[in-house]
Length: 223
Image (tube, rainbow, N blue to C red; front, top):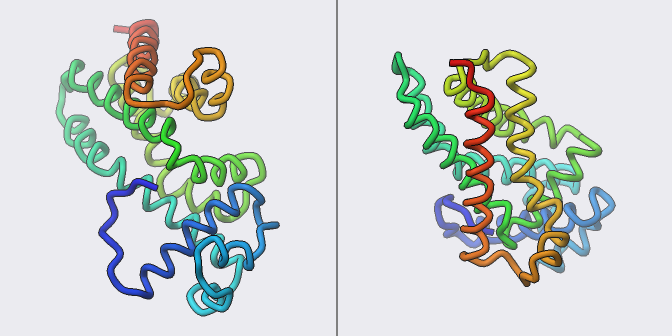
């Protein structure tokens, strides 16, 4: 899984990281029905390592959610910091805000069309449909801040109240067209004749989605 996190150096860190990656794959596929034996085998670790490093399967599940939250945060932190700086200016530059929305959407497309993040998507999708404490952790740490951040950008660009439910719904619908390429992956591959989302295909998806984003922003603008 691609990540901008620091490289893992110690043997213990490597073992923990391999267990978490294996756990995300197994939990994404089977939920908490996944077995510690299968997780350890996939990680190439002794089953006792799970107890040693995490205490229990349930605690490993939470550690997996924390890893996912860190991964998402690492991939959007710089963008959010830049956006906060722009949003603090009055009046804000609309062209810059539009570019920030485009950048955030393009980053989401890159992550959600990558085969390497498929297990993360499976994990989060399970939690969206049958939420546990793990989803609340991911939501509070990264999903809510990013969602709110993008809603604020949409609100500032269009002149709408970012706290208004309608603005939140419009922003969520905007994100939905990106999620469709993850959740409807097989459909689009079969319809286009693609075998995977390579660089050229990803660029074509981005071009289409960002065109839609501009239509949405223009249609919602009140000034």
